[in-house]
Image (cartoon, rainbow, N blue to C red; front, side):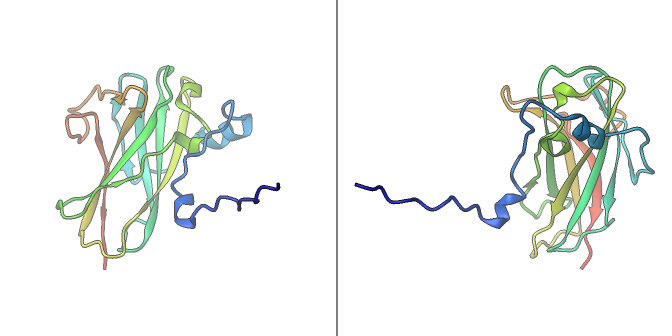
Length: 184
């Protein structure tokens, strides 16, 4: 007796942007070149956050510089590698209404699109990480806060902020990367 052929699994289009892709066996030399910069461009947001003397946030850019409900913006963050990392950290990103009226949006992701895990980062490199923030169409926020940090999923631990007095943070190793104005 023949078994029926099952149709291929279809993934809804809206889920495709949420997938975390990892390069099997690590980053290729080309992927590493795309993830590392030799010169950081002019930044719209300065960094200075030091995570356990292993990674320093150099700063970030936002394109475009504002958001409207239903639109999205691209954030590019730059991290200076100070010391080798023994764990593959996820960059957690929490997008919250500055006035507290909107539900949090999580934009957690593997660094460099999953192509360059933190255990492969080399001391002295500046790693470029890009992600997109999408504001829901009905959002009523006047501005949104973008919080970020490094999270290790296996232990549910975070890289600890070494210099909390130097950057805006919430006391739980989550730094305020930027505040984005929302236009109507």
